[in-house]
Length: 280
Image 1 (cartoon, helix red, strand yellow):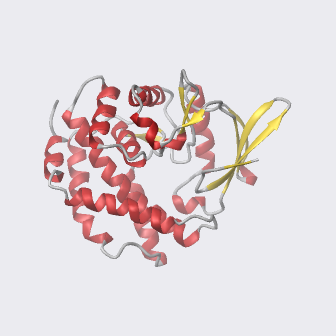
Image 2 (cartoon, rainbow, N blue to C red; image 1 turned 90 degrees about the vertical axis):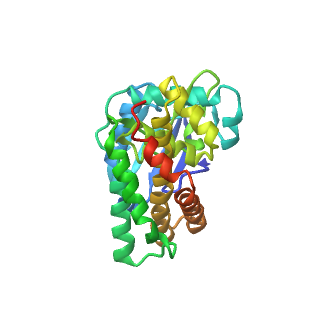
């Protein structure tokens, strides 16, 4: 039975005598998006070992197929983050993943952004007309984040609401296409962006993750969230030009870009660049 969701693969629920499984069939253009299916398989195994990912049952590299165990529970939606204690529970799930075995790969949005930009430029894929106007702002973010580098931890790096499964007592994290060792504040900032959290909710998420309110970590997550939106805009450009999936990637990417552009232009931008350098 086909499962909804998945913008770079097709997912199927398979029921067999041994149980229920999810079969993921990858698209042929995954490499354009910096997805390595072998790495996805290895990191999925490590996430399962951490007790937060679905068990990996099989991997068929020649066919681009990954089979994982089916997790019982409800798939979260953005509105679920309004529920009492949900943000704290999600922060706990992230900490569980981040405390697990290191992944076999690294992920850095600055590097991904440059790779995507080179690709869309070389191939002439369309991007928002004023996209390059914000490269100077990106450089300022990169410089500010480098002042107090965070140790990297195993991150999912794609935590939209649909990648959380809640069985009532535990929240699982699925889909490790973009998984890699990364700054934990990217995980939190990207999560806030993907799940459309308010600034107050983002502050609650970061505080729940670290156990206390830290202005520098909140600023760090917000800046990573800006880069998330700005970088994934190019992901959408590539998908718009190459994907055979019936989805409006251009509209999706435009929404990401407008969010990034608004954040770059916001009066708080310079303050965030200052706060991220703080020692608190």
